[in-house]
Length: 120
Image (cartoon, rainbow, N blue to C red; front, side):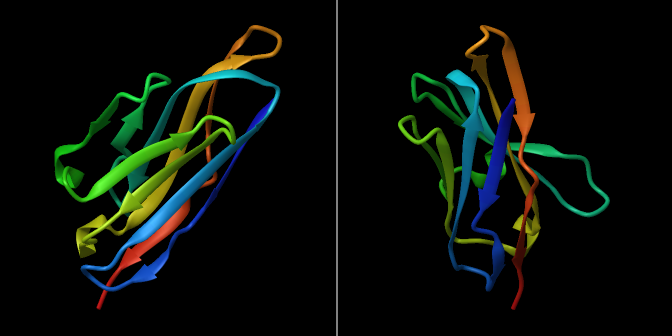
């Protein structure tokens, strides 16, 4: 099995920064795609950023220029550096990781979510 542990959420004021982390552990052979999603109250979950095993990245338009996704393959960890936070960034942030287990089966798992609140 593969497990994800997220950390780094919290309460910040507009314009401030936060860094989210998501560490994967378990029977992992390789990790392909690592991504961040978010879900605000009453809204559907939406994609924020994704990074491939080749370090290619893609961002939602509403975070371009403010958020940066990165990964540490040695630690099976994905990060989301969030700068210039806005009240509309308030949401529960989830990481999602896909790859292959040591049994050569594919996996796709979600983190437990971490709350980010941007408010003055």
